[in-house]
Image (cartoon, rainbow, N blue to C red; front, side, top):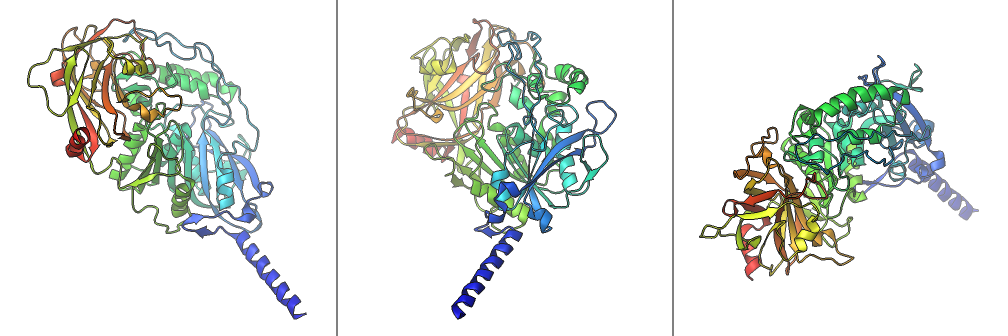
Length: 608
């Protein structure tokens, strides 16, 4: 009998422990742990609603309402449990436009010409209520969070219009966060008056997402909205100018040749069909069409209004950036520029970079600690220590290496000169040639890709200057900068620059880091600034300087670092008829590369 009572008592203690576990999240090693009581998806409460904003972009005289869904553990209803929120917003949840012929700009045109009109495909809206999306929920709800999604303006069942970076795309998620904190109203229907309260929320919100979905957390944070405590943007587009232009040049994002703001607008405009004509006329065919300026590629008020770097002053949220160094769609400069500004502002910041392409979140444990620190208030020290976590070339994405910061604090600029050995080839050297060099010329021809030009023994279509073979590994970290003096045979020309690792690896299992170090593009017409361009006088020389895309890469021994200069890049630029001649003054052209250990490390790597 005594044994029976002991066993029964142990059973009651177990039940009591489980009951206690059901009631609240728990933490270990600074991370929110999976709570068995929160795991069963059939127990989750899933609802949707419409949150009222402060703007009217669809012209119906009423504030636009955003469609929002909520997924929460049942204990937030049965036990009065309040939890923080992980929030993701997107223009993609309700579907996108089909790939229609003519929907992208034709890039086969002369520079400075007006682009031909494009086709405007329509989106067929999809999706079911109350579930907008299932992203994030299986990761965060079992760990004691509520997950919220919303469709951005003019998409899905959200009212309003897309603006592709306009103010409403910042104010929409702000309204949702205000609703979670009791400062904005939510309704059961898009047009009704029955209110919905977020009584189950603590008011603390974290946002994350990838690509456009990673842009929106930053957009919300720039409003300074109270309650948005932490964001983890993954491969975010932080400036539409930097996405569609480069140093004054009309330049497409990698993989989307001929895309521009109006193309993306058409791609995401899945909102109310009855409002689309108004939206198209006001935003796509007026504001966007008159602002993007595909003729000069200059930075103007339109682009400035879609550059989140200009809006960061009110930002308070802790920032954990993530990006791929070989993301040639949304290039890593997008995260870099925001990270450095946030650091300058004194915000809590960390940055995670991997060596692959578009997307790729930080390891889950790091994301967990970031949200646990700022949403639950657990002192886990995630904000301390190394600011930079970089995945090395042969490592998995969940195994980053810690560094004090990015760029590596031990990196120093090393200036390399272009010393010719033949008409279009030569050596990258610390010392400049003592004798005056002949000017080097290249002929533009988009039929030759950058990949092929880097592998040719010699070519009239590019200049290629290489370091001596590295005797030991060389670590580059930060921004390389090209200083160039050149002339063009025509009033306008593309200028493309690749830094490559040679010899080129054509093996099927080759990694992109085996070949590409970094890239850059510029319009010589913008030699003064990106806001001002002027036609080039044929044969007259102009000087310009610009940064290449940020990188952190260890170039292995046995390789050579190559600087390749050419004109049209058939993966990124407009493609005029072949024949433009670019002439480069080699004596007045240099490349500055960020070497960990500086000139001493560079000299050692090429002489040991």
